[in-house]
Image (cartoon, rainbow, N blue to C red):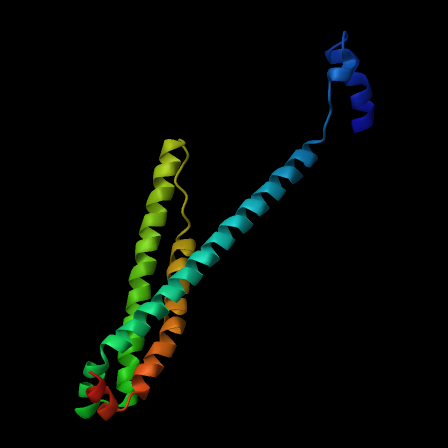
Length: 166
């Protein structure tokens, strides 16, 4: 039917220049819109993945420096009876807390920016709760994984070595 309509519509809508009338299928425009939405979603997911990677590297870097700067504290705690698992749990907890605070801050900033932009465009604000919670949970998981190495490194320090190095 599209070809039949296209052959008649030009001369009917614009008799003086029927070749200037174009007929397209609505499904073609919907397919193009879906492809653009998919590309945009992929771009945002990629940007989010890079942000999580950078955040994870930041947690690892912060925690490794923390272990190096707190060698004396680690040695003192170990000499007073703290086990390797106590030290590991302390540094892993710090990594989880650091990443959790970063994830919550990012969720608040992201939701706020989305709300402001939506208000400026006169759109309804739509931030799915699952996206906010999912982002925060993912951040804590990545922070925990990033904090494992520094926590294990801190737990391996011998009390005498840590006290002598502090």
